[in-house]
Image 1 (cartoon, rainbow over the protein chains, first blue to last red):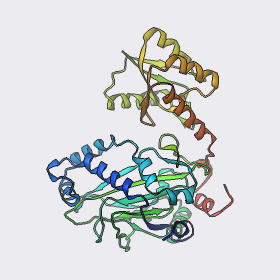
Image 2: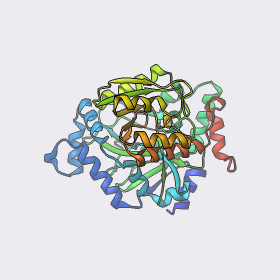
Image 3: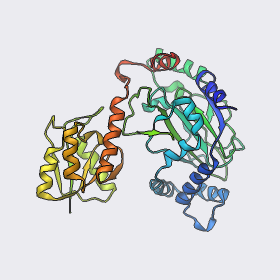
Length: 238
Length: 143
């Protein structure tokens, strides 16, 4: 899919689109950096599935320790942006506000883990003109651990209905049964989506943890909402 | 070695943070970074050039400063020059942004970043709704 087609899907289509990462050298470096910082089992080497298997058995404290190690990863946000520069430039221009610290998300399998309840990214106070890129650091080739997305039309209908009831992310959403299957993706693919697209993930049973990264960004020429320098930084694409 | 936290006017760029809230934010930052705070410098209300900090620096030879945000840096040229001349050897830590560094380039980069943010439009979230925000994105010429 060309950049313009992806943008059409995101802005006037379902509100999300899967796309191939443009610069795999940078993306591989991101993955290597993250795994080297969260992999406390050095004897596993760089075998991604073995690391994911070990992580699936980690305690919450061990996961937290791994997350703290990730704070040493500087330039993480810029690297994600630079792994898909043409798409971002076409969508937002060269001058950007980008998330100061991109997220790494480690989801562990098992009934005791929390699922990510359905939500819109808007809930955090990012600008309505923001976009989100989410990318797994490994293949997600089954229904275990991926994210489901509701299209923008369906999401906005729910949002409008809630607003008439004076609610935001209320019981209607929290108790919603989502019958959509999570997106299956290959390593090297990412999803870009609108902050109005409702999404979440379900508890999954697998031997492997799911590890993904995400980042929010917007054009410098579009207005901010509640997020400011606490969350965003100015960045100009080359 | 003197490490100081700095409280300022509660209007900090787009944020409104009372001074006890500022102290909580800075003390939490200090704790996470294993920094022992020696003194707290209260900049007066409406002060916007960190002048008290610079006077205190003459007496206490500050090595590290902790502030809540880069928005607390001076934004008038005269104030910027004074700060760059007097404080370039002090490490600045900004708790909300989670960044630290020292020297003219570091300070100027942050001052320039604030200019970019000050130039950005901001939607007043107290005067909107989720549906209005959604509609905004559908109106091509809105912004």
